Image (cartoon, rainbow, N blue to C red; front, side):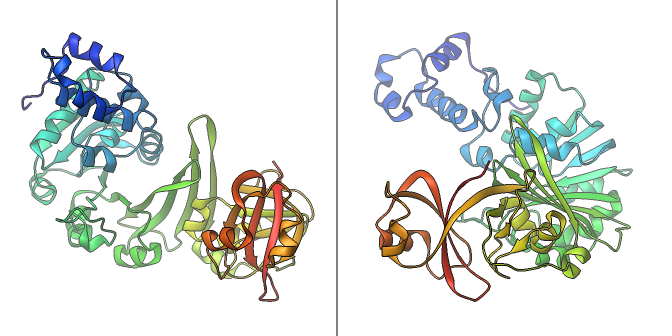
Length: 397
């Protein structure tokens, strides 16, 4: 293991006392702490502030070492890593893009042996040290290039996991598979030489259909959201993939059971749905379903009507209590005219959502002169008559 420097007891005490402090102010006051390396401790405090909700297990342990911020930003959260680990199992898994080691940590709870591979020696050292701190003994750490490691790996793994780096030389965010490092498209033949199963994590910004066609051997696509914010898209690749691709839209919550919506691509393409004017209840699917593209499937499975082909808002007369998304009670339907709308919003506060509407939220708010907040919701959309409409709603659940 390369040299790593954990915090001393005095440094740990400093971090505890200043856990919520303003890092900039601490740097200005560093002359008050002559016996401490304040810039190093400020980095540590900032890192802990960043991971407090994302990585609570790591946050709670002051023996943990943190890498540069970019590695923290790109790492999986505990809740998504735990979910991923439950998707696969076996004897041996190779994590070809080890990074901060979060995914390897959770995969190690499902596999007898995990090979962590990372070409940055400092990052490898940090992750190996942290694994020791957390009591994990079945991860082997390798500082190596992903393709080189695979070529030299003897035997066959039960699964290979990749989370390619999505930053360019100028630190710009990248989304295309061919732009990321390693280039998984070039590596596909080698990956399937070493395992019959590959789990790939990509940016939520990547077009799913394009990626599916490029990867070819996709058996399942999983869209992972946390608290209705899309975080990851996963592609499960199999050497002998079935002809029917399954989609799984997952919305995770730290204190609640995961909400999972499943559909097949062919079902989505052939689903027969109905359209209607706004009825008593309005439904907005969660962001995972919207990203996965289950627009027809969600309408068919829950027997609800779509407001418009491109609106992705739905309606029914009877309340669907287990709908996977937001549910509103429609109070009134207005034309997009200020005089009519503001009569229904006496407090002049409203939460605005746009779905298939010619103007963005900021323009609507400016035109109507309404502040953000309150208990009412303004849904701006297009109806079955191709006309822009405003739905004034309140939360139904």
